[in-house]
Length: 188
Image (tube, rainbow, N blue to C red):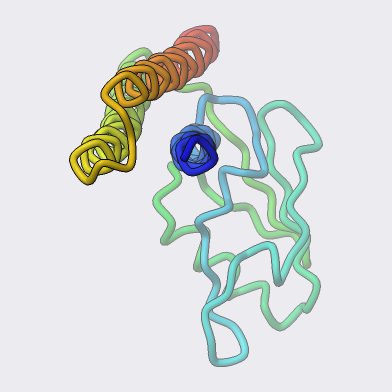
């Protein structure tokens, strides 16, 4: 009996952690004024008759704090990569130099920093909701196990407390990650 609930708690934790990891990835895509190769992760390039991620046709580096360099491997793809970067609405102007494309990042204005902070808050709230949904699923399962006679009322309460503690812990981690990102956004 307890093996099922222990397994269940681990599964719930894995699902909650997956939401936290997704939140961290989304925050990496927010441009804070510091160059990050992750800023270009969502960029898709149309080459060889199909769409593929930028990192499959070029090397992305950050040689300076306010510069992203994209070294295109195949000279014939430079125009397609340039076009994809311009269409990605990243707020940067690509500068083509042979097979190297430079993306100088301007310092964000106060207004832009506030927009980024609001976006980070939206991401955080959607992932808090995702964590709470996992909690709800876990609590529903515990109720069902108790109702079906597969778990005692005491075990149900004990495990429900564990699920709530896990939820609180992960929401606190989301809040800490958000606070750290906000500080980074405002510092620039």
